[in-house]
Length: 313
Image (tube, rainbow, N blue to C red; front, side, top):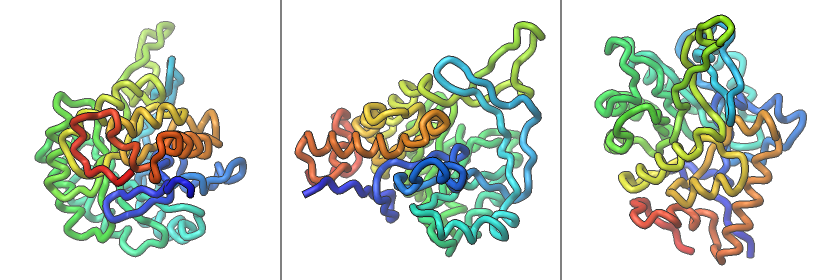
């Protein structure tokens, strides 16, 4: 009998624990030309806002040792365009879709999230709460337990889909914010969003990115992300989606052993479009080697104070 690769993210069920990260995969149409995108248990589409956004000025991406630094600025056509032109194609995607929603006020998050109700193949909403809150003098939602609680409660009040709060590592106490998201009704937590960073152009003596600062992704942030999952997994009982520099099955195992139910892969897709298949094969093999009937049995294996509910092995 084979290993059961399915995992539960709140009431949503994924066929396997490997997810394509928001901002790196869109709906997978481009990758479908070179790989089987159905290898992913879900694809998280690029964050959708209420209004169209051009994003930040160029340059806004630069490679750095062990990753990428980017300041895209939530570029996108907005929810009306998405519903009119993109939503109809989601039903044809050969795996589940997680809709990423971004906003600059609590009301904006709720207004965009509710319009995801009933879309074919969309099984959850991920809240990109790392943008500044215009109602609170630019405070980032994910930097405040009170603010994250407000957003989650507002979305849960009208959204019929499971809600995932995507948190930032750029805070002093990530656990308290994760606990606040759980208390407000979040069905799961994504850890971690990009780490703030800067690259200086030494020829021009100014920041290389037009925005000045950007978000660091890729293998360079993996130890930070694993620690975040380890700590938060001791504080909450809802599922955690681990992300941050995952390139191999071994990397994914670090996150799952720390307490992640699923893992999300972003930057690695740019180098290896076949990465999802390879990671799934490695996770399946590790579960089988340990005699586990389910891949979920790997979750929290190395974390003695893991707070989540362990599955039967």
